[in-house]
Image (tube, rainbow, N blue to C red; front, side, top):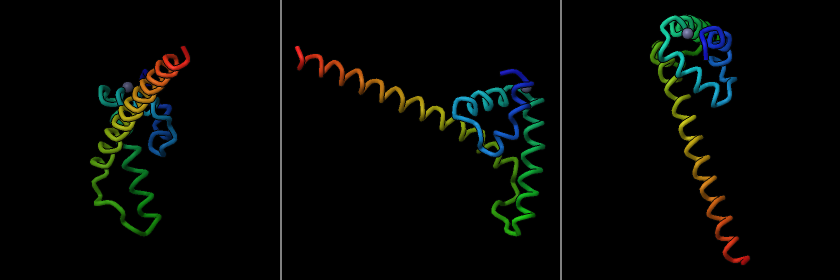
Length: 105
Ligand SMILES: [Zn+2]
């Protein structure tokens, strides 16, 4: 993912509108690119603060930067779990097919 692609989907990341693979690629790019990280941090902090002001209830401790870092590591973690589950499912399918093959012969 390049900087243009990354900055085009900042809004989608903030509002959880990305699929797991795209969110993971986005987070990986953000981790390595200071420019995109700064762009994301400004947008995220501003939007989260405004949302809290509008809602009249404070749901965070005001540590928007910490919330953003957790959101980024969550998206990487979710993708890892997704890939792990996919491997398990594929393994089960292979085991099933081998077992079915043995009993059919
Ligand atoms: Zn970048």
